[in-house]
Length: 423
Ligand SMILES: Cc1cc2nc3c(=O)[nH]c(=O)nc-3n(C[C@H](O)[C@H](O)[C@H](O)COP(=O)(O)OP(=O)(O)OC[C@H]3O[C@@H](n4cnc5c(N)ncnc54)[C@H](O)[C@@H]3O)c2cc1C
Ligand code: SF4
Ligand code: SF4
Image 1 (spheres, rainbow, N blue to C red):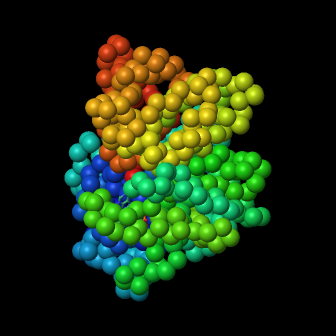
Image 2 (cartoon, helix red, strand yellow; image 1 turned 135 degrees about the vertical axis):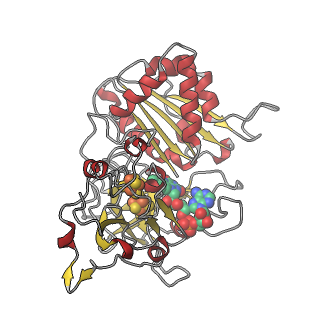
Image 3 (spheres, rainbow, N blue to C red; image 1 turned 90 degrees about the vertical axis):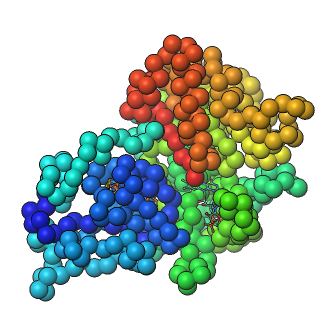
């Protein structure tokens, strides 16, 4: 609890480490987090210290606090200008920290009615998915390398995985870490630091990319991993733009050196136990973690560990679907693959637009059979916005078959069996 009412333990984001992934902004139940083109920041007048944003942050940059006099709390406009966090404020030459007594936690905050006007919603879990991994997931290593000491990886390969002549230029890029340890698990991601500076002369911040290969390497036994990167040539409104990191990565040549940070990710991980089923729903480059998980299972196929794999994969057309060829070569008894194409080519003439959520409903009997199994783990990765569509599809699939989705949703979240990663 804040013992001194004039002192505030202000919640701040470290602009040097933050990779601008937006996870915290999506997580915060009271919209205390916002951003501009430069920084992610916390509004001191809104933050109620519920701590919901702390564990989902992949870098730990959100877990920063400064003790300030309330009238001198940093405004969001001030925070937007920061290149680094400020030092602790002082009062008459002494650090203010002494005046604050204990750090605030959620319980303290809830008790501190004078300091904060709270409503009950701040303690509600704002996320649709799990914040914990499957019980049998392996231990993930995270944040082994930060932006001040990135690891140098060498490009071992770079080739396009979408058909030529389409808008979607997506690349499969293999990075080799040589003798530097870089342990990863399927579902984790890394950060790439593009060279150069932004328009304000600041070094470019890192961009996050999901790992597309299994834990034992793109090439088994090698200390390497792969990424699936789409070249960004237009912004979300369709205006032409040259995405800094995606163009850098897509243009890399064999032998180039790349600065890498991470790994990141502690919950979007696959189960390891036999007979566990995976339902994977993805669009575009959201296929990267699904490729990693599928390949992990494929490499262990001879162990006969059981469990079903069901994939729902959406793209505008077959030609824009990364890894279409290799996917088609996987045995049907190994993985149940369902493609949804939202544009004309790849579909019979006149067929309606189809998205992954439509396919999930069409395959509702099989989806429901898996959902009834407590050993089923569901992963969604790809376009922002698909989370709502997938949740609606799951609700409909359940409602049509007398499954209580509300209860099942809560159970799956609690048990680390429902994971979303959208960007
Ligand atoms: C958890 C996580 C995992 C990710 N995994 C992958 C992955 O496996 N493969 C992958 O390709 N990307 C992935 N991304 C997205 C990636 O981190 C970058 O955001 C993306 O490559 C664009 O970076 P950029 O530097 O090229 O564009 P920027 O220079 O950062 O942005 C240029 C402009 O394009 C807009 N923009 C940014 N991204 C997109 C987009 N995807 N579509 C349209 N406009 C955009 C921006 O708003 C900005 O206006 C992931 C993101 C997160 C948070
Ligand atoms: S601690 Fe809670 S209220 Fe504050 S920024 Fe994080 S999620 Fe939002
Ligand atoms: S790295 Fe952490 S602080 Fe930065 S945007 Fe992502 S979740 Fe927020």
